[in-house]
Image (cartoon, rainbow, N blue to C red):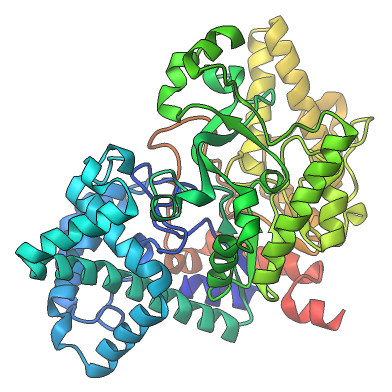
Length: 552
């Protein structure tokens, strides 16, 4: 990241957007964190100057042990986690003899972060004892409440305190390293005038330290999700019921009674690393779709009618929580709820810039309310069309908005263009009623993208392949928009088709994308280096470089 920050500064890029960096559970989804505060050690950089107690030989051996996983086309999470955990354990075993300045810094960190760190370390200890894939409500009854958990560990310490204290110390040590590196990275980014942009998931994993120790803040019998929205037709459950994310709902009334303290501390902590952050699924702050069962039960409801499903749930069915947007009164109530909650978020942000992920079906009151609060919402050119199917011109985008073609949940724009061409060709090869509709939608998408970017629409709509010229026109048109923020995914920068996540699906195909090159290779390979140079030119032409915006 330090290298990419320097690259960004040298090319006029003013911010770098990241996925959530909190520690994840077994499914490796960055939106399924086991703590709202603990950072994921998988992102640590391993160098003797960064990890006290490690020598160059230790790191070289770990790299050798990783073997092919080090250069795999996708992230091999199990292999990387094993290697880094082994190195961290080695570093911890040697830390007692470290420089007193470092041990003093570690002690100070534990004191400053005790409000969440003590609970987290205890939770990680219990996870380790009972199996990291086992949800806490399946732990022995002697550990299923916070008080019982503390009592259980106290009894273990009576028999032999040393191993317990060692493991608790290890988990704190890892978090100290994580915060130490990320805060140093923030300092470096500030020095280069590059903003780090973080991401705040709407939910927290059911199997998390937060839910275990603060369960009064959550509805444990309802899971947040989204309704079926005409997408994901290849996934039967998604098509019938929607997405069941498996994260518990918030007890907003309870949170309001304590001044939204959980949210306040969550946001304030993030501002120590990020100068901008994205609020995931902003619609969930107003109202959210909820499932009365956990995702592992989804298969039980596939193909059932509402009446049949209600038999399995004691009469409860998926619904909007606490109320739908079906009447003017309900809309007003949901807007009022969102206003209270989002103002609490803004008060904790203390000057950090806030972006709202307001995609999907958007109630008519949301975007005007976000504008009133000064929160930037998304603008995706090929989705923001008028009733005639024409895209909203970029110079008509609201200034306080975030323009982009795609997110991690969508194909990059290069993949969209190439995918549309494949659909059209499939229709030409084998015309059917279904393929006719699909190719019509594909042609419409290409027309909208072309119109937005000022790309001439070819005669008879004989669409060209995705070329370097088309890529640059799309990027430059996005950057020329009136939006305060404009971003492309790294896949779009280099014209790659890969997708980061396929909503409604599970498997190794999600969250495992990695660039096929290091930054050093990118800057040394002529073609890739030229892509970066043209990207920088597009930024300066559209006056989006930090210096240009300051002057204008």
